[in-house]
Length: 251
Image 1 (cartoon, one colour):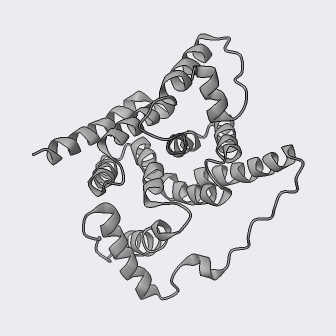
Image 2 (tube, one colour):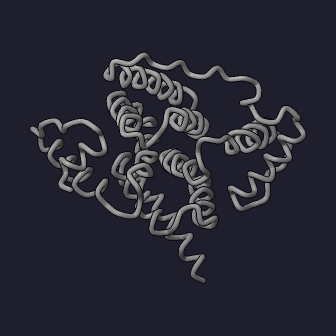
Image 3 (cartoon, rainbow, N blue to C red):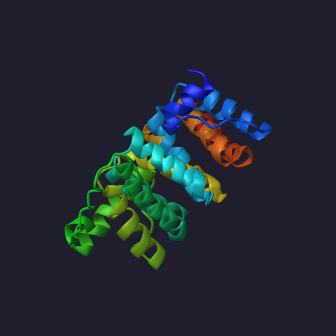
């Protein structure tokens, strides 16, 4: 497909005119090359792009990508709600709040365009919050931390590790349905990459590749997709982490 055809497929609307050098270059590069590449599905690329535009606080791109994700059917409303929660944990609750509002707004927009009543979201109950037994949550959090990160769970000696990481992030969030573990990696990787936190970048790249949830070739595509939406300087750090993993794995 050419750039305009890919734009229609990805963004689900007709492409606007390209009147400036920026518009021409971005159309040809993003939609003529990046979104057209094999190696990741459009749905996979959406998860990476959504995390990037939401982290950038770019209101119109957030609107456009949430709308396209829902209108295309690549992400269901339940999946996108889970993306919002996962993104908030790894990129911050204030940024997650903006994504939450956008998802609600674009969900209403889509139904209004169809001339339909927007269905109410289901009321959440305590059953949605995972195991009520706190000791069970910690045990399961420790195990899932190890399964996801491929290292031993951290000590239970600080609020950050105990209440945050073991109880909530891995005792609950990573175990929630509606997103696969691979999906969650595709949201997490751009979030840690844009944070400039070297430890988490290498940790999540290593575990994504070491677990087999993401192949090395797929990681190359994630690096490119991320770089296109958040900058090549930050993408270079993500790429370097992938190269370091491959060098160790080949020994």
